[in-house]
Image 1 (cartoon, one colour):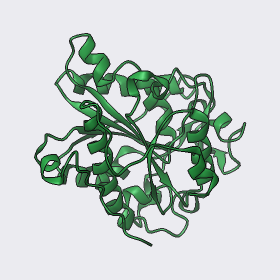
Image 2 (cartoon, one colour; image 1 turned 60 degrees about the vertical axis):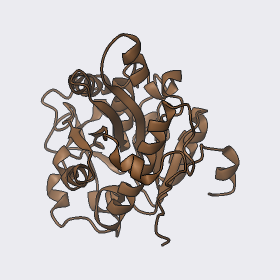
Image 3 (cartoon, rainbow, N blue to C red; image 1 turned 90 degrees about the vertical axis):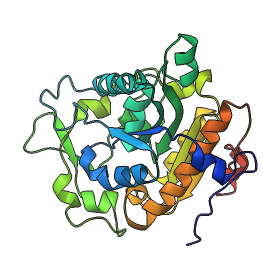
Image 4 (cartoon, rainbow, N blue to C red; image 1 turned 60 degrees about the horizontal axis):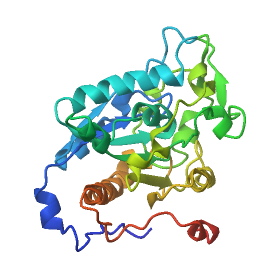
Amino acid sequence: MTAYAPCYGKNLPRDEFEAMPKPMIFLLPDAWLPSDLYNGYLSLVQERGYTAATIRYPSLNARNPKKADVAADAATARKALISHMDKGNEIVLAMHGYGGMPGNAAAKGLSIGERKATGKSGGIIGLLMIGAIIAREGQSYAEVQGGSLPSWIVLSKTKNGCNKPDDPMRLFAHGFPVPDDFLDGIEPHATLALTSPQPAPAWEDDAYEGRLAYHITTVCLSVPRYSQITMIRKSGKHWMRNNIRGCSLSPFYCAGLKEAMLQLDDFVRAFFLVDRGEKFQGLEPYKPTWWINGI
């Protein structure tokens, strides 16, 4: 596998970027995965000079699965985001898998430009999808995944109204290295969260033009590469993108983690340059012909 080369552009050299205050990386997990499974990723983010935060969804091992929909997860995320913004934090909202749905609902109206326009501090400087679901308003996770829940999602035998992957290690890792105790962290997820409609998403808004990025996980089973590319194409938006050759969890563990950090820096540099009215030299926006050619 070819090593990833950072794209230090002439309009934002490495030394200038290194000296700049770094934003907060606010991570929204995939379904079934509690936030502590991302501790290694968040620790490395902080070592690189960023601050980091995450949440636990009310739909994860939900107390009341009949009320644990996407909107409830989004409300929890939004409350936490606003709390950090009110302290002046500029935020990159990173979303993994299912996290793309509550994350984009939570980010509505919270871009840094929209916050500044109302005299408020902080705000979201970029939306970073990591093998994540891009849904339009009214679509459910199930609908985006082909019209119904994938066959690998099975109802929980111990938690009514919840579900689990039938084979988490195959689904999330399938041969790529993850910690031995990874399976111990998997929890049931409210089925309603996966079948309820997407609230209006932020990625559609002009306020996020130039602030959309996507890590394509190229050997992913939970959200296959083809599905990721299809969602990007159907969105009609320009997404900066980079490939990580690995499974759904590769950006968070082992060899893929280092590559994900380098790509994160590139995306953050690109987000910084939006405020200057410049385009980052090194990352290109999505072009349909690239996908037609299989790139």
